Every structure is written in structure tokens, then in C-alpha cells.
Length: 597
Image (cartoon, rainbow, N blue to C red; front, side, top):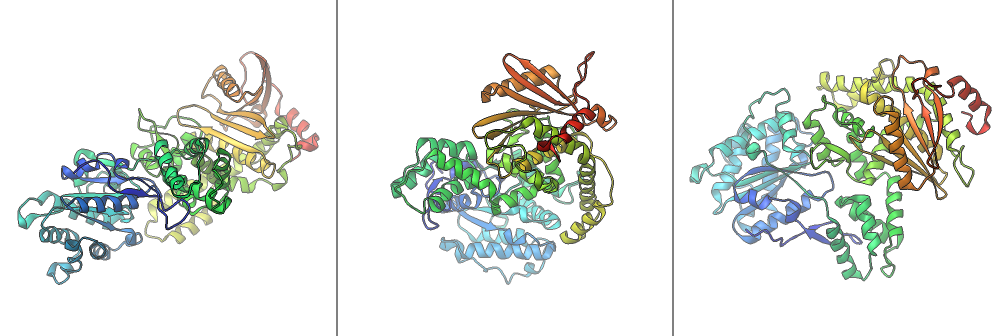
């Protein structure tokens, strides 16, 4: 089998559902040809809407057309809510028959429902294994099977399914009585380690130890588009319609999406169908891509909703908390949890450490913060919007003074509620697993209102950052201002920039004690240089609950090398005055109409 692609990835069409522009499928899954040739069982994982299913269709058609093996793609999507093991095994066998029936290969299609009368079909214990064995025996060439949406399998059905695959794998041979698929892949969002965690949550095998999918511990990930592939994809549209994508448009499409397939297609579709109304005479410019990307953030796309729902999972939230404040992942976060967030497509891994380090792309970077601040923002009075803009500039000093008043008056209540919900959610998931989702949600809501707790560590630090970002989002709402964010694990800081009427207002967020004052100032100076700004704000949070608020809120103004930096928060200099005390700030703020809250 050669490694040159003969089929292409279908992006669902840029300008028309019936028009398909394609990118080579096989290069997007490195090593897959070798895995099939070497008779391995493996996992293909990638985030939602990254082209897994379409890629499998292309691979299946390619393998069948080359004639060395037979290939079959079987979807397990219908098993999403199936918890009964016998029902699940019946459904898997049914889906194998559905896949056979729809195959374009006569040798496969004629075997659909060909084994229903076998006595073993009434038994769940070996039903899937025996069906795959009989199917392999009935074919004159080896069989390759792709189980798409395999992560829809739940708990016991997953355990039983893997156990049967394991038995067939261990007993397979060239003997007619022991034939089994040559190669097999579980395809979904999760990596192999997360499947094994599901099967062995407490380190016990539960009957599925020695899984064939642990061979060489091999799992394959579907690669995002490269900028060259984006250029080729959009180039196919140009060849078809004559509509040009200017070089800057392609570059900005890459910057905004970093090659995420659904985003690449959605950007182009938004411009061509919604903005241009299929007027192919108009070239697509960088400005068009920029506007489409920003508008996309304001829409509640189903794709975004399904991804952001994952932020409610405790294991995802714990990883995200560290990334949000620029901290390294704490030791209590397992490698499996860290990899899980990468597999979901929310974060990208550092090439050296393999650990999650930053959001997967700028669009997700903004969506993550908006999703995590939605409730916080809803609690901030709408009357604050536009209070600190006058049509020409932003009164950033007044805005941050108002924020500190809001923070001192509201952060403890909000933090305790946030913590209560977090603790309750974990407890419910662990101890009330037998209840349905709605019952769990009702219990969480009832008890969270009465439960008192406190956030600690990185969860509390991330909460402080999120409150400020929610406050900025609320007060800038409707003012034509834009809040840019830059955060990544291990950086020790979060950079924000408010842009209004062409002016840039850089802010850097810090947690007291993470870095020295001088290092923080040096980082902010560098950020200001990149933005060509002469005034900046270093916002420092003191998360020590034992320190009274009167000792936490200070304001220092420094002039260095022609730049002005306002240090906002608690950061005392040894042996020197601490700055403006809280009571002075509060009285000054309340006396100002622009800062009144």
C-alpha cells in the first residue's frame, strides 16, 4: 500500500453544501498505513468537527479500491445513551450489519445480516467477537475495521466491548477457524489512555486488561490543516468560481484558527455566503476574515456550545485554571487529565513536555474565557457599561478603581458560591452516579445555595482573573472597545489589552508571590513595547484570605524610561510606603461620578 493519497478530505463545502473542496486525508493521520500493514489495533483521536468521519470514509474507500484488504467503517454514535450491556452489544452488531449493507463492495454488502440465525446471537458475552470472527472467516482477504464515535460507549458496555476485542485479538491467526480483523481502530475524541481510565478507574482491569489497543501504546491524532493546506483548499474554490482569497486573508485565517478544520470552513462560508451573498466577483480580503472571526465569537454556534460544555467538567476546569493564570500544571493534575483536555481540542500541548500549554487557537482562547465568565458577567450591573469611555478614550484608572471596589465588596460571596458548586458537582458525580442528569443538576442547584466553602490554590487565583475579565467585558460592552487576551501555562502572567478608538491600554494580571515585583515590571515593559504603548497597568491580586482588605488595595505610579506604569493592588515595597490606602481610594472613587458603582 502506497502512502500517496488518492482520496481527499471533504470540508462540507465552502460556498455550497453540494460543492466539496478537499484536502488529502492520509497525510492528516501520520503512520496509519504502517499500522494497518503491521496488523495493529490502535486509536485515532481528534476534537469535534475536525474531520474524523470524513477522513475515515476516504480511508475506507481507498483501502477497498486498492484491493489488498477489505475495509469497513462502523459508527457507534447510536450507543451514546445505552447503559444496558446486552442492548449495547446488540446495537453494535446491528451497526456492523448497517455498515456492511451500505458498503459499495459487493463482497461486504452481501454479508449484511447473514449470521442472524446463529445460536450465539442470543448471548451478549461474545456476540461482537463472534460476529467479527464469522465476518473475517467469510471473506477472501483480511478485514480492516474502523469503529467511529467509539467514545460513545459507556462504562460496562465499553468494558464488555474491549474484552471481546481483546479475546479475538489474542486468539487470531491465519487458521480459518481463528480469523479476526487484520487491523482495527477506535475513533473518537479521546486518546487510548482515557479509554483505559474508563475501564480501569481504580487501577483494576475489570476483565479488560491487556487491551490490544495498548500494543506499542500507539494512538494517532488527526492533524490540523497547515497554512499550505488552507491555501490549497481556498485555491480550489478560486479555481471553481474565480473568487480570489488575497494572501493576507489566508494568513489571517491561519492565525485565527491555527488550522482547525471546522473554523477554516466556517470562516470562508460566513464571508462568501452571508457577507458576499455568493458574489464571486469580490475578492476575500484580510479585513473580511478579521471581521468574520470577530463576529463568529458573538454567535452561539452549536460547535462552540458543545466544546464549551466541556468546561463544566471538573477535570477540564482544573487544567484550565492553571492555564488561565499562566501557571505550570500542579502535581495533583494527572497526565491523563491533561491529555484529555488536549484531545478535546481546547488546548494545545507544548512540543517538548507534551503538557497543555495554551488555547488551541485565538478563537477558542476568547471563547474559553467568555464561557468561564458568563455567569460572573451576568452578576455585574449593566449600568456599568460605557461608564469609562467618552467617545475618544478610556479612563482606565477610574475603571480599575471601580473594579477594586466591586472586587472587595463581591468577590468573597461569589467565590464561595463558585466553590460550593465545584465541590457539589464532584460529590454528585462520585456518589450519585445512579441518578439521571436532570436529578443531579437539581441537587447541585438546591445545595449550592446553602453550601459555604472557599476556593484555594489555583482555582481561587483563576477566579480573580476571571472576575476582572468579566468586569472588563461588561463595562466595555457596547462601546466599540475590544479586549484582547493572551494566557498560557508556565508564563506566570496573563496579558490583556483594551483597544478603543485606535488607542491601546495594556494590562498585566499577577498573583502576589508568584514573581518578584521587578520581574513583573520587566514583563509589562516588554508587553508595552510590543504594543507601542507608553502607559500600562500591572494588576496584582493578593489571594491571602487572612489579610484584611484595608491592607490589600494600593496604587503605585512609576515613571521609567519614558513609560508610566500603574501598579494596582497589593504589592508592598520593603521599607517603604505601601501606596494609597483602601479607605482613601474608596472615598475618592465614591466622590467621582464617573467611578460610582
